[in-house]
Image 1 (cartoon, one colour):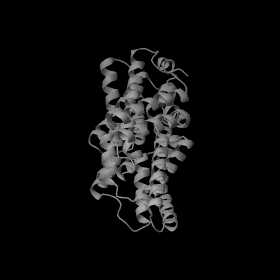
Image 2: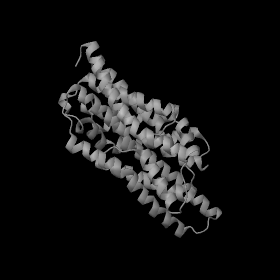
Image 3: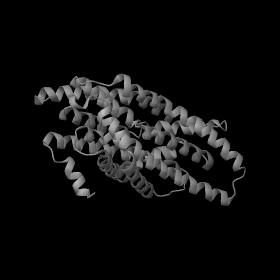
Length: 334
């Protein structure tokens, strides 16, 4: 598929539809920048990758692959599974994406890792309430909540098991073992970046499919491009925060936490439910540390993160609802 053709499809509508597409691309850009730390931060913090630019480039490349080849299920969920798509207006779609993008950008600027999946879904629900659209509470929303609650728990359990297994295999760390674990950690971080593309791209571009502008695969590709640009242009702040300001892991626990994060989030993506890479990572870190009775998290930073997990989705929902009401009244569009 030609890149220009793919993009021309989504920009073929009227001015309001174009604004919706731009808002979705803006959101994709913020997702890419925001999750650079949650994917490659551990390898960067451990010194396996010393260049922030290289870390951002790896995020961009692997996220694009995940977005193109495995984001379809999440694109479908976000685009058609939360609201009755026939009741979604162009203005409502634009408000959803713009709100999610602005809230994510604000958290990236403050260096607070948040769940873009949760705030995106709350932004969709907020605008949906404003539009009076049918919201699938008892189906999609319930399963999303179960996924969000289960993500850190499952990741924690997996990391606990992986760490115990790793400690039983690598009883002493020789120079050769160190090189092996370093390579494995880098591979796991790249897998996390691939999972990011598969799991979170749909948050930004699912609405393109919901509005009938393109197919799920093309939407994923477009979102992957936006995320890659975000990682390369503004990924460093969260990369530094996560890699050197929050986590305190050695190679074995780092590898265990990273694999737990990636497997949990990837499974959710295959099921079509967007979940938080950050929450999966924090759960994995807690489980890896717990396997050794260690404190692996900076408590102050963790408190900020937990607060933002609850505050930002609620804020996104409220802002999305209010912004839709204001714009619909001012513009006379519904």
